Amino acid sequence: MEWFSFRMQKNCKDNVCIMPHVDVYDIEKNKVGDLELSDAVFAAAVNRDIMYEVVKMQMANRRQGTSSTKTRGEISGGGRKPWRQKGTGRARSGTTRSPVWRGGGIVFGPKPRDYSYQVPKKVRKAALRSALSMKIVEQKLLVLREFPMEEIKTKIFKQVLDRFGLKKTLVVIDGKNEILERSSKNLPDVKMMRAEGLNVYDLMKYDHLLLLEPSVKMIEGALSS
Image (cartoon, rainbow, N blue to C red; front, side):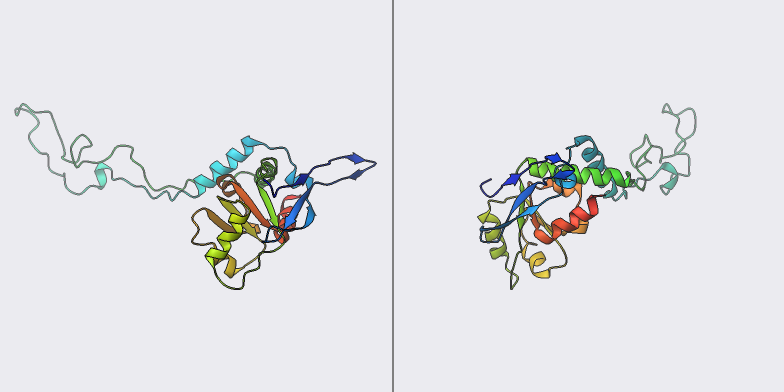
């Protein structure tokens, strides 16, 4: 990426460590500074196993669990024996609602259930650190100083993304911003969320990660411990 510049000099000597830096841009693609990143958050070891476990948990928690079928006892009718036990030449049958009959009950069919479960908080944080570090390694993280927009304009919002060559993008902002949120709403390959909602599933789903500079400190504050 022509806009990506990441300098990692994790050189600790005499208890003094040089932290990683990433360039900061404005919406016109001009470099306006650089940002010191926490190596504990953005330069962590990438652990794909825990990322898989957390994504699996998120997908399970999103399941509605409303699938349901009826057993033979829940289907109306079928109380009368359809024919006598012997003498007809046909198989013995006690009800027309048997699972072997058309319109009968379902054996071991799905019932409403809760699929959600939780993994430890430390694991979730470690997975987030891994996903963020992977974006750095893949050179798919962009930091903007700010994203000023005076009115809701999807066209202008998309022009900024196109200027940086961003396609499938997750945009993270530091707080409520109705203009930005509504400007990005109609773009199918763009999702905007606030820093506190950052999660591994969306980091893995979207190719690029665009962070507003104030959101970086919020993320680091939540994941440093």
